[in-house]
Image (cartoon, rainbow, N blue to C red; front, side, top):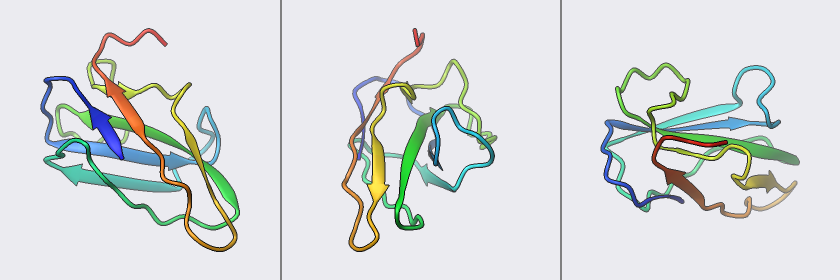
Length: 105
C-alpha cells in the first residue's frame, strides 16, 4: 500500500523494485499506476527467496523516465521498508509513505 496525504496530483505513481539499497544495476520490476488514488494498493511479481527494496514516487510530469526527481512526492528510500519473498507463499505486505518535497534525506 502506498499512502500520500499531500495535495499534489500527478498522472502516474511509479513503483520500482531493486534487490539492494542503494540500487545497483537495473530494476527487477517496475509498475506504473495511472491516476493513483491513495491509499493505493499494488501487487508486483518477483522471484522467491530474495529481499526487495522499493523506490516509489508520484511522477509529476508523467515523463515515465524511471527516475524520481526532487520535485516529486516520494517515499524516503533510506527508511522505506523492504519485503522478503519467501520460498513458498506470499511476501509480507509493505506500507510506503510518500512525502512532499523538499526532501531532506
